[in-house]
Length: 100
Image (cartoon, rainbow, N blue to C red; front, side):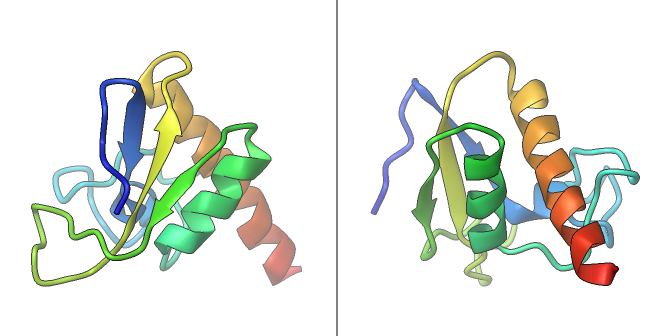
């Protein structure tokens, strides 16, 4: 299990989920949100965005403890908002590439 430290941000898949509202946990604009994100996809996008992600597939979000959504930890580089947006942009690019 990967532990969260003061030097890492936690990225949950629901941060990027287009099906959710901001109140339900989405942290990106609808233009950057994707359909059905999972922790592995977040990890791949974080690598493409230039981070060194650590995947914890067994993690459960405290907001939804019955669901094993997994999480990704990345080093703190700038604000969490900028990290989330950079990862979301890479996720959106890959989703658009799949659709074409």
